[in-house]
Length: 461
Image 1 (cartoon, rainbow, N blue to C red):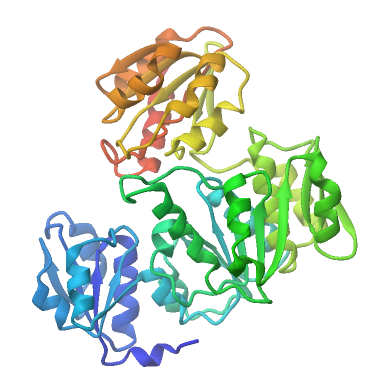
Image 2: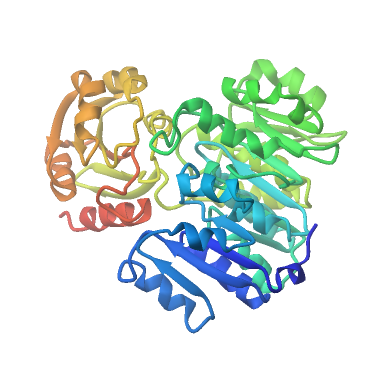
């Protein structure tokens, strides 16, 4: 582990401002580093973030990147949103300048144990459940990473948690060399972010880096029902530590209970992390969708290892209502239920959302085209979706892939899409916003998109 005192006098370039860049810049300057920020966006576009930097002594290079600036550094750190393939990074490396990522860099200064949660979907809910299980059990924790605050903020706070709960995206894992979490939670693995990665294999390889430094003290918590995750588990790096599997398949119970893990059978979860089997009931669960069982099992396995109490876990399961923008119930209007699943930014997430309903779904999809294949949705669209409303940059592609399997409308604006969905609905229908795409064609984030959906729905009378 490294100490922050090592930063004094170091020339460090941050590529990409945004929220993570702001936090990292503050951390560097506060510890005596000579920080520079380079971003291709203009001063006007970054005004809000620049305001957060205040009067800090930071050199700014905005509106583009110059090779001279890159070669003057001791280290270059990329924010998670910055693609790693830019030629200027290779140029810097060829001149002996090290290039790394924000998460890899900051994690080297964290001395406390960390639970790292990754996967294509379910990361945030699983992270939040772990938070609730531990926090309500009286464990001093810090939560952040891809959810909430960047890891830099933990170091800046000066506090000492008993354990850190970090949601970790593939973007954050791309530069991993030394990152060594105490626990790894891998929820699932499906096609995603193919606008950033040149292939599915490249995306998987980024995710795989979370296991790079596993050792005998590492516990990996893996989804036994996801073939891609099980395949990852065969990697020798994963096998260096202990593995707990979780599953919704009763047939796997004997095997999992023998080695440790969790199995959901009907409305009961059976968990073994030590000599005894523990039982939790899901009879009162408020979250929709059987995939919620997977998130709960993964969270229990991680939290029990750090002091979460059995009775607290059961109480949280009984009362936890889920997170905003994840199959979030909005309201019922004229006998029609509205659900906000704006966080569903890939095909796998839409599948999980549709699995939470039997039929009579009016589905709103579309957003930024991230080069995903929507054909796997065909069977669910035929069986459950009575009307498909498409909007945004990707609407033509989605229509080509699955538009023939339901009554389908291609709509010009987001507002019109919501209105037509309501007009097409009848008593007993469910209007579901589950875009299967990122929001960046129209909105700044899935949060903004989901909030606007709720705002529009709440105007219906």
